[in-house]
Image 1 (cartoon, helix red, strand yellow):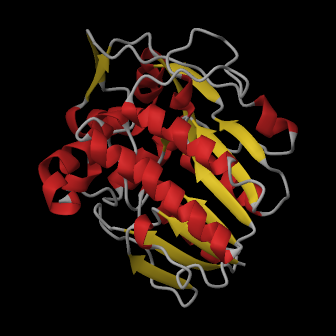
Image 2 (cartoon, rainbow, N blue to C red; image 1 turned 135 degrees about the vertical axis):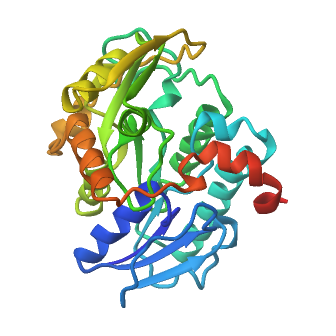
Length: 315
């Protein structure tokens, strides 16, 4: 199968493409490569330095499935420039959908976010829960979903709402809860817990990738939560501490009130099976750190890097 992946050089895209290649698919990666390029050289991979808005009929020639991961991808990065965030996450998505319609692709898988629900105290935040996005990032993902749904008469559509992804990638992000706290513990022997009671739904990167493969290989369509462990920040710190016993935990106050759970019963009910935990992610991060595979790069902290280079990459 021929698959186009936008955001193919990103945190998830890098590992997703490697797995797609292992499964003998032909892959086109589309990415501006702002955060680097750590994709392997491979005969079945076409690695394009390209903005999503530049994808045309020629780029999509012969493509069966599009996996749209590219976005300004978290709250701190999204608030740097609201105009750029809306253009990137919404307008570019619409342009891509129109090109997919013109090129008569078969399937479109959209990376949304569990954060579209906003702050919720519900114990069962399922796909029928009202969307109450509170930030530009949340709002653009919600609008992106509506756009995708408007095209479902032209091709099959799948919308995934993942929790906070964790675990190792060759293009590692260290601004995600488990990753950030684990690397702080490894480097400083200290875990800073900001607040502590806030709940974050955690999702191992391997299960995120497996969800893309799951929908690639069956005819299921619709909207699905993907996130299986609703843990408080304090609970995550305790998990890290059990793996690194000499590490101390320091509790701080926090103005970050974001707290929500995800219920992913729908995806489980159609046959998807969770394979790894956030504790597995912590163990993987420790192993890769000790093996010196986690490099100190400015791009590891996406929003900080963007704030320093926004004009360079977006004019």
